[in-house]
Image 1: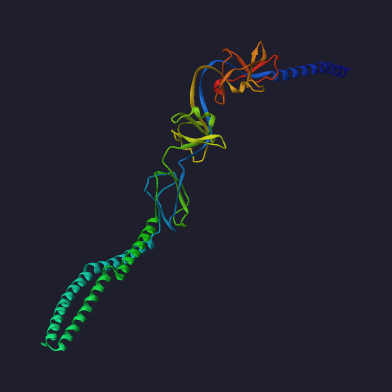
Image 2: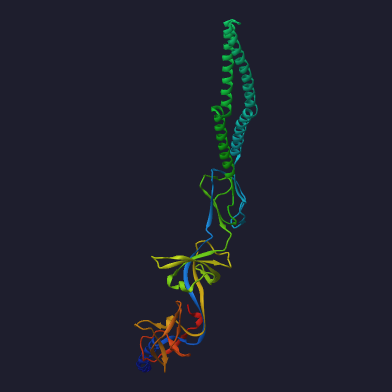
Length: 406
């Protein structure tokens, strides 16, 4: 009997609880649907920022490749080390190259010595020989002419005159041969051949010296060694990238900005850069370059910004977000653009009046992509996130503060 009474009581209780819970659920749904984030319009200082996205583009990695093949015998640097321009970084086995230099130098010295001997000894002797032969030839000519006259006068026999003529022809041949030899030594085929040999061996020596020099790799710039691809004892071929150096200079971010923002930009403006990998770190930067032309396809303009306070985590190629500080507004009634309703032709806002959401036209000045300066709303206006249903009683939820506007 007692159990029947208990069951009957539970049924009665359930009859009352179910409607009550249903009403409570409906109330909670109503409350949730009519609770809105809000923003109170108050004077504040507003910095206009031009937003852009880009990438760390400078300094570009300087890849140092082997100019010749060989085996690495010494690596004189470490990754992360600062190196100076001209500093010796890599040494390669150069024994054969040194032998080639010595051989080329020996051949060059030999042919130069031969040329010098011709110019300083052989040619002067040949010139002296020409002078002597010329004197003998002149004497023989005079004797031949004297005997000719005497022979014509019958004073000497014809055989003496013929001997004088033969002697003259012999001396003339000797003189002509001496001149030909002198000319050949001084500027003829023999000297031309020697000059060609000198030029050839000079070229061979330069090639050998370059090959020897290429066995020692020096840093072309002052910077930090970012990567070493080989180790001591390994063989490399010409063109292989042995190591990479980052030039020592401030990091530069390249970014594209909408052409509509160009009137607000000029070199020297301050900016903040945050890298996607480290979004909480705001790095001070300066706008240093604005491209003189627009990318017609994208409708953007290229900017370059120099990061002033370099951090160890910055790497070439990192994606970045940029905020360029353009203008300052003091004590203006500004509201976040997220509270502006653009669902109709004219912009409007939802204002709380007597616990209800009232749609109100908005006259404003846009400040970047986050804020609008209200021109027709009084201080203290409570703005609601777009309510969509006017006239309902609303409840205030989370207050949006200026520092939280993203």
